[in-house]
Structure formats: C-alpha cells, structure tokens
Image 1 (cartoon, rainbow, N blue to C red):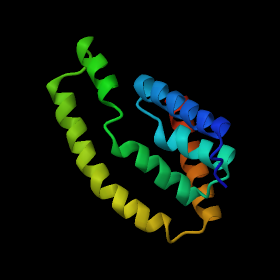
Image 2 (cartoon, rainbow, N blue to C red):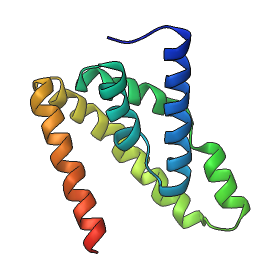
Image 3 (cartoon, rainbow, N blue to C red):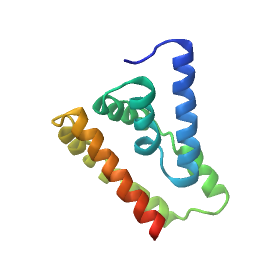
Length: 127
C-alpha cells in the first residue's frame, strides 16, 4: 500500500530524481527505476506501479535533459525527428501495453518484467 506520509513523499521525490538523473545519462527511468521502486518500496502492484510511472511520463519531464544535450551540440534535428517518431509509437504502444498488462496477474507481469530486464542486461553486458 502506498505511503502518503512526508517520508513516503520524500522517498517518491528521491525515486523521481534518481530516475531523472539516469534518464538524462542513459535514456532510462520509468521501467528500470520507477516501476521496481514502486513495487519494492511502496508495495504497489505491478499494474499500479506501471500506471503511476506513465502518469509521471505524461508531463514533458525530458525537456530539460533534451535542452542540455542540444546546448552541448549532442543532439541533431534528425535525433529530434527520431524521438518524435518514438513518441508516436509510445503513444499507441502504451495503450496496447496497458490493455495487455491489466489482463495479466501481478505475479505473471512482475516475472515477465524480470525476464525482460534480465535479457536486456545480458545483451548489454555481452555486446
């Protein structure tokens, strides 16, 4: 169950900061940091944690990171276009992913997430 106390709110803010830093560094955040933290630290179900992460992503949370990359000359208009294409895919994909996730049990979804992240980690390690 979610903790609405001040320490719980500070923990949530710290999770957001960590996800933001890692998002700025590696382009990750929601699925790798926020969702596991909400499940493990706040006892949320996998579905509720995924939905909460999506709420956080509704706002233009990446804009400051994008501006910094742009200021440093590390992002081109091609990257912006590709990012917009990804966003369009995310828009549709999030709907279908949510439809699938809400039909699965929390245990099945949590285990599928663990397998997915494990495969990604191994592929990155051995690449």
